Length: 108
Image (cartoon, rainbow, N blue to C red; front, top):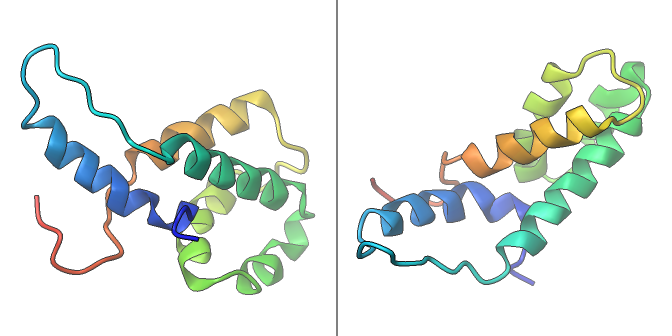
């Protein structure tokens, strides 16, 4: 139940901290990361299928953490009414870059 896309910014921040401590040729394995990014991608697809004049209401019906992560998607694609490969690629890049940790006491 903790594999939630809403945790991705926190996981990304921890990922970035861990990467600083890897030995040369070291690998960082993130259990469940792809699952969480797929959950986010599915949420992006759902959002982008909502008519643009109904997106604010749709977002308001989502959990607060989802609203925080999806609001930039809605802002970036204000007129897109059908998801495209380019939009999904943007969403994928966006989520792996997010590092605003939703949990306190996580410092870089």
